[in-house]
Image (cartoon, rainbow, N blue to C red; front, side, top):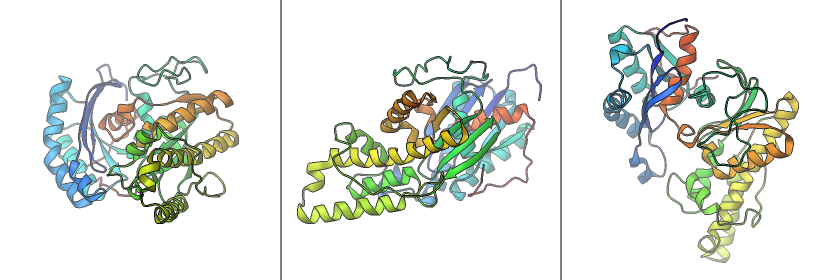
Amino acid sequence: MKTDKPILILGIESSCDETSASVIKDCKVLANLIANQKIHELYGGVVPELASRAHQKNIVPVVDQALKESGIKKEDLSAIAFTRGPGLIGSLLVGASFAKAMALALNIPLIEVNHMQAHVLAHFINHPTLSLPKGEGKHTPSSPPLGEIREGVVFPFLCLTVSGGHTQIVLVKDHLEMAVIGETIDDAAGEAFDKAAKILGLPYPGGPLIDKYAQAGNPNAFKFSEPNIPGLNFSFSGLKTSILYFVRDKVKEDKNFIENNLNDLCASIQATIVKILIDKLITASRQRGIQEIAISGGVSANSGLRKKLISTGKKLGWNTYIPPFEYCTDNAAMIAIAGHYKFLKGEFADQNVVASARYEI
């Protein structure tokens, strides 16, 4: 869709336990607000019913504040983009219902967005064009100053998308043309981090804590079993079992084993998960002949994964892309950027669209 006016997209994200609203103007973020739900920490994981209730409470003030912070009047919006799925159905229904009602009231287009596709497109926030020649990207200011992270992703590229609920390798040919070429057959990498943290007695969410303690640990201190899954698919259920039995047996011998070895345990667990991820990414790169490699999703904020991607990229001659930390975890800016590219192609939804807990790319 051609337009002489700026494209102003309101994005709404409510797939899990964070209510987020963002306003972008021609791919530039004007506001990106997230309301977290602390109550789930009491239960060691997200409770779907509590999450949907919290979304109902948060969505109006979050959207209102996002509009105020952006300086954009709701009447000037070009379209409203929302997460249709995948995710928790109760949470998705809140965002979908609000987006449909607001779009209808303003008589503007409604855009449905795949949550996982949006994670990939987070790389294009503030970077609406792909004019950079291969290997000539600029360093991303908000990323670690390691010299090999680039901006301006070049098509086609491979994106390792890792979160608490999903682990996928996506072949990205265009903003809206993607194909999953590898995915987990059981648990996600983010869930493996959180379950391992629970085994170690760490509070929820445990993934970031494993990353924190791993900084002071020896990644080679302990060995855990790695899955032997053919092709580009992943598996993490066996690894979780390996960690559980290992820790259980060691605690029987020494009740203070976890306390005395916490840093090394976290470093070893993190190194194992990261190795599984990177090994599959190497295989995918070789099979497809693609050296433009990106990561996205909540686990892409993990320092071990980011460092390993960069070091592997240096060794194998990859151009590597890592989104800024604020766009790794669930946020509405990534929904809005996906909405931007769908708006350009006129891919709009009608009022009959419904949320979907399972929604494939």
